[in-house]
Amino acid sequence: MAETVERSDGWNLTSASDAPIPDRVALRAQANRDKVAAKELLVPVGSAISGASILVGLSAIASVVPFVLIVEVCRELLRDDTDTGTVRTLIVAAFLVAVLRGLLQVAGLVWTHRIDAGFQLSLRRRLAAKAARLPLGWFTERTSADVKRLLSDDVEALHYLVAHVRLEYVNALMTPLVIGVYLFIADWRLALVTLIPLIGYSFALKAMMSPDFTRLLGTYTRSRRDVDSTAVEFIDGIAVIRAFGQTRKASASFSAAVDRYADALDAWKTPMVRLQAIADMLLAPVFSMLLVTAAAVGFAALDWIDPIDLVPFLFVGVGLGASFLGFAYAGQALREGSAAARRIAELEALPELAQVQGSSVSHPIAGAVRFDDVSFGYRADAPVIHGVGLRLEPGTVTALVGPSGSGKTTLARLLARFHDVDAGSIAIDGRDIATMSLTDLYSIVGFVFQDVQLITGTVADNLRLARPDASIVDLEGAARMAQIHDRIVELPHGYDSEIGVDVNFSGGEAQRISIARTLLADSRILVLDEATAFADPESEAAVQDALAAAVADRTVLVIAHRLHTITDVDQILVLDAGRIVERGTHDELVASDGLYRKLWQSNENALATLADDQEVSR
Image 1 (cartoon, one colour):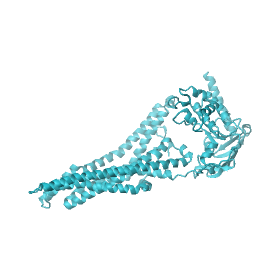
Image 2 (cartoon, rainbow, N blue to C red):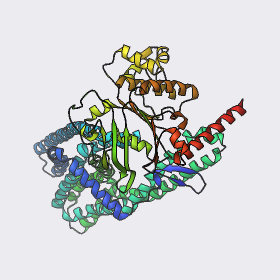
Image 3 (cartoon, one colour):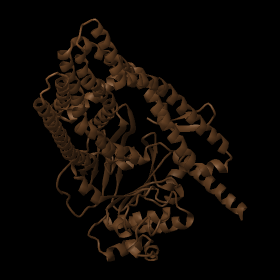
Image 4 (cartoon, rainbow, N blue to C red):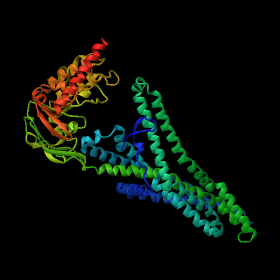
């Protein structure tokens, strides 16, 4: 998990790269989990891939046969009584087998790619359905990049596992096996010589795949993410950095991250390049050819072999080492695909929201909400909400206030089942929300958050998210109530203007679009997460007017940070460390000597300071 750490140069930076480096045991355990996950995930297509592997296995055998036939052609040509008919037959047979080998190879690859296309389609649909059943909190706790990697990139990473890995391993196994058998039949002594480079290569390959190199690779990967993270922070915060004259310190932090990246790259790549160079030299055809030729000269001098026995080793033996490269080149892609399979398996194992099918909500909805001894924690050992009980009466406005981290947003989001409660229950009009379908629940409960998300499309598309069948008259009515209609009609294409193309709304304008959506949905219960927190004074006034229209006659729960905006609400609930410590009206709570009074005094002091600053600026 990402955490903020203090660097030696005094510059704070948030990065996932500071996680502890796993040891050998942990790495092996992780690799085993990856392999098991990949095997289990591919069970539905395992038999089909095995069928394609048989074709590739036959193709691997066929790939050796033409060389064997060419060797026999050479033997025949070196005879004193060469039979041209036999030579012709052998050459034709070699061509036919080569064509057959190509057809088998293509058939196997086409088959596995068709398998992969169907598998990816099925898996993407499965993951999309899974995502629809996950708590909304799962998405809010992750960046869009994290979600994209799990739902898209990791599925794409499985392509190699399905379409290639089995075929490449079968080919890398069968080809040298057939060549080896043939060479041992030709001459077992020279065959043993051809194995010398392979033995040396196996030691080099084992070293390159050792836990030490895996750990160095992990360090390199983390340091690369560190550079990316530092660069993003530097760019995002460039205005603040320049304003406070911290450009040099920020640049030093980025330089330090780059230095760590360079050191990690050098520590991993330098010894890896040495091993790779040795391995490539051992498997180079010219090295194998020279080695076996030197051995054949010596054996011939001892009368152990006939010089003609060298021919099969020059034609066939040189391909023995190249066929083993498939194992090395496939290793990294196999590890990445297996890791993706493990992450997908972990995603599919996540607990889901209990799903209720169909609609069984009786109308009309009064909108009475009851939290009964509700407890919740993001982890079982770390509760965030402790035994909260509260009532929201129809047609009233309730404000949640408290220090940062007191659990305000978490408590409000439980009403929308961003997560299911660990203990207790939440009911609307006496019915537990866990027994409602999500469609019913979201038709009753609406939200206006600080961070408004507008989708790619027209203004009308964004408004119709709340009610797809809404007419243009409905859209205009909701927009007028949300104080945004006049802004929309000024756009080049009015309600058909493309967001991001024809217009980029300000924060306050986007909030009013969000409020218009909520008005269209006509939700009886509204959750407002300080919708004016980031609005300028002019926008704040417009948003407040829009909210006044939205909350009329509804049950409203407000997460409040600016206390002066909730002095007239029906009740205020004060949270501290996940517990309600005070409740009452503004006047009642200010009159008491409790946490709310301290928060109010801080709020007043902040407003007074702001007013003084504005007066000085005039």
